[in-house]
Length: 75
Length: 507
Image (cartoon, rainbow over all chains, first blue to last red; front, side, top):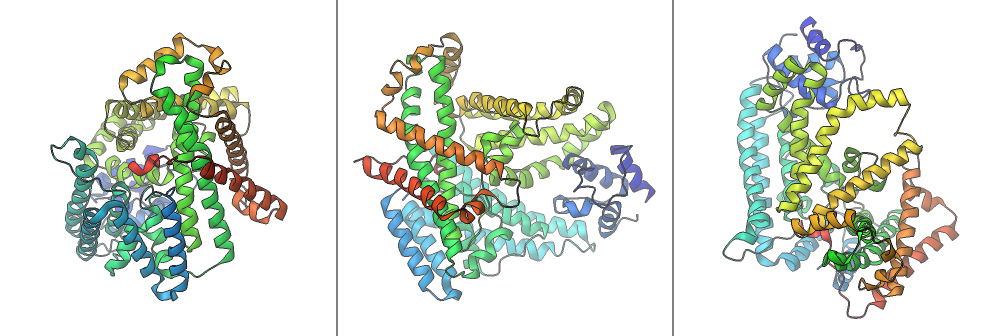
């Protein structure tokens, strides 16, 4: 989980990532999600594709972790 | 057979009669039969052949993608399954876009005559969106080929869109909705509004705009600016009018097609404009072009490099801005391949990309000056006027037939104002009779009032269309009567006049 938090903090050092509405409240915008697909793919050795770019997959740290686990990463 | 062809109204009347007379479970078959008949009248046997081939390829490919891809929610063999699903997706998308390019772009330059396929852009875009959604696991591949055929060929939307998603309309199309007075009234009003915009505004404006663009050297800057304003109104009335007719027909048979316009003249930035204009194309390009390009491996590497050198905040804009430029450039080139379309695309994409980088400093400046364009205020009005002026400038390249005309127009706009042409009778030399000019201007005033009210109620819980049907009956009768009078005048007063083709039907 620390690694995931580090990736998110590298995008927005001062943001509060405890929210369950990261995308809905625009804490993460579409450009952040594009950046995250590259960063998370590299950090966790998984391949995030077009089919994973849904708001519900990025709305909370828990949702991102669940997505990564589905793809076989250990978070 | 266009919407403004008298035969279309007869076709429509027979369609409604057949649809509502048929039992509920076969109504969608009636829709499909009328869609096939409509397309046969437009594109002939060859057109039907190309459409049928597209449907067959898409049907088989979607089933294959789904079988090979499996469930995207399951982690087992995820990368391998993804690769297996990707092959038929890429093959089918390539074939579909190959057909589009061959018939739309390559046809005019081939040594032999290739039949133009009406509506090919729209059914190709819908087909590709459907395939990608099946690949993403958002929709299940259609089991019944005829249902897929109806989704790709539903006749009201076949020529000008809107571009619909399978998940939005497939159930509605096959539900066999029966007669409903509220839906019928709403649909009829949309159809009437569409004909009003097309006949009372777009077709008259087209005559005047064509007259000016055929010889820009006759006119000074004032007339040219007025013509560009009129052209903006013309293209909106033409396209939004046509789509309004489409949405109205669909509404009567219970099919909710997505909205394609949201008062575009109230846009306060270029990006906002494209969120309000041809919305279904903009969102299609965002989902099926912007994201795939932005998350591609080359742009991923570029993004990493940019973040290292420019920092997190600016660096994240680099891959997004490259993808943004490609999207807006593609949107412009979709309108045609010419030097002017390329200039239009490069300026559009360039300005929007630039605005991404300027967002942060502009935001700081706004905070300092308390200049907030998001609310109704002087700042918002200024932002709307600035966006409108920018679109007028860009539209010069969209409308002028040659680059020479575009630059000649620009040069004359600034070299000779000739304000006097606005009142010395020049307006009466634009191939419109004085009463036609008056009818057009009155119709534009009606449209402006409608747009202001629609924008005002856009964010409220009951939008304008809903308010209209709950307003006093006298208001409803008066508005309907005014629109009908305009349409009747335009249809009856122009003997021997053929309405101009819908501009967007050619795309």
